[in-house]
Amino acid sequence: MTLGTTDPDGFEEATVSMAEVLASTAAVALERADREQDLLRYRTVIENVQDMVYVRDAEGRFSLVTDPLAEWLGFDRETLLGATPDEILSDTGAAAVESVVDRLRSEGDPDASERIETELVGADGRARPAELEVSLFPTDDDFAGTVGVVRDRSELVETRELLETERDRFSYLFDNLPDAVVESTLDADDRPVVRTVNEAFTEVFGYEADEVVGDSINEHVLPEGERKSGRELDHRTAAGERPRHEVRRRTADGFREFLFRGIPYETGDGTTRSFGIYTDITARKQRERRMEVLNRVLRHNIRNDVNVILGCAEILADRVEDDDLATRATELREKAAELTALSDRARSLDRTMRRGSPRDSTVSLATLVEGVVAGYDTEYPALTVETAVTDVQVVGDGRLALAVEELLDNVVEHAGAGSTVRVESEWTGEDVRLCIADDGPGIPDHERSVVGGSAEITQLEHGSGLGLWVVRWVCESCGGRLHFGESDLGGTAVVLSLTGADV
Image (spheres, helix red, strand yellow):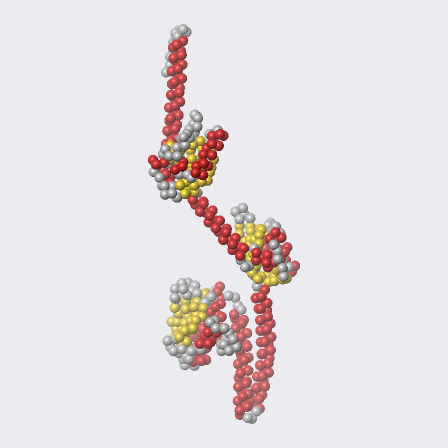
């Protein structure tokens, strides 16, 4: 709107004043229209945004609530509009929000915002963990309210609770593990610098945590002669390996032997840390050494003495004229020869069982059984061996053939070469069962109990030989179990429960 005249005195003072009033009113109206348009656009954006957002007016009541927020809380939007935060906040939460609003108003920065972690209560009464980001409603006038952006913290809270639970479980396990454990940080030189130790470490090695934390564990437990091997374990652990090695370490009561396991892991900042676990095997190693010495001495002495007995028996058998004495000398010679053979067999079995773990291999059960049975068909043509073995892979190696041979030998020895043997397999859903059944006299109950493990080995109850023990040892070394039962052929059924590798 424009007013004008060519006459310098064309407008009276009243007219000029009226024009100024009209101009001022028009300016205010235009500004208000622009402002209302801006607010309309702002409201449209908020109402259509897919985030959880609310607007509170100057009196603190909800003037706008987005659909996602209403749905998350389980309310209709109309129910929340005009309501106060008390409807969805506890007294503590509402007070915290108002405190944030007061700070924002006092600071006077229109672009400032503040976050607060609280809980919003839904229509079902259930508290929902949330984060509110509160800011002042944009306006050129006085305080017009606040805008809040709501973020669901449920998953974050659950994750935190899960992590806290896992941390508590780990701490309990760490503190109560019977093995000595050291947690270390591997420095630039791969030295394991102690962060913490468990109680078992203190008991075994004699150091309290504050005595070793910050030091290389090697400085406290490595004997002089183990420095090089100890550093090799450090380097392997730092390289990401999980070394497993028998070591000798210095403890509170002298030197002891341990099975050491290094377990490295990476932290979020790229630091390499590790757990060093020390399982005390001193008693086991000492027992093994004693048994090895005794075994060698006994084998050597028995073999030499039996050879002397065997030689004397042969001389007596050849020279005595009395038939009864000759018979006794022959029996003596035969028993001495059997004892020598038993010693040789025990030594051979010991070497066989000392080879690597059969659990690292798999073998075709059908092929293995067929190979064993073929040899008996040739050596004992009168022996009937029926087979029904599935072509399945089981955990184990060629030593399983030794177990089958021992059982077939047992049949030939006790039931005769004309016996019938049935070898069959079955998948039970849990394991593969290889059953060797015969029509012989059966294995005595006391021997089944001793070899099966349900009875203790005593001077009177110890089994009649190595055969069944070999079967048990082979079966257990493959991760299996040995069972005895009755055979429908009339004799004994020996069952080897083995782990299937492809079922």
